[in-house]
Image: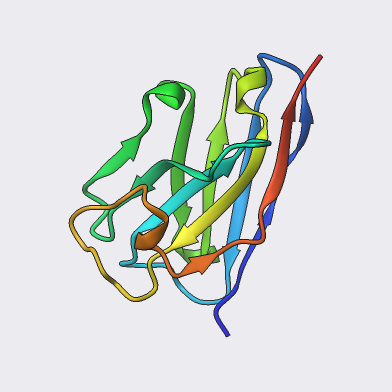
Length: 127
């Protein structure tokens, strides 16, 4: 069974940094990946994704210049580095993988584009 296990969340002060990790039970090489978050009372939103061919990366405006996504194929792990965090970043964060290979040269921030999901991890930004 394909699994994604997230770690690295927690409580951080405004302006601080966190790095979320998402360890996969198999290689995510040549698979599109995404990161989503869900704030209390809001729908899950896609905030970042990377295409399977590694050529295309998308970040929503609210995180541009602060968050980056990356992968370590040797460890089957994907990362979301979050810097200069603000209270509005408080949410449950999810990693996602397109195991079916629906897209190769593009990626999507729609939940429909992914069939593998992490369990979600809480990030709270507060002083």
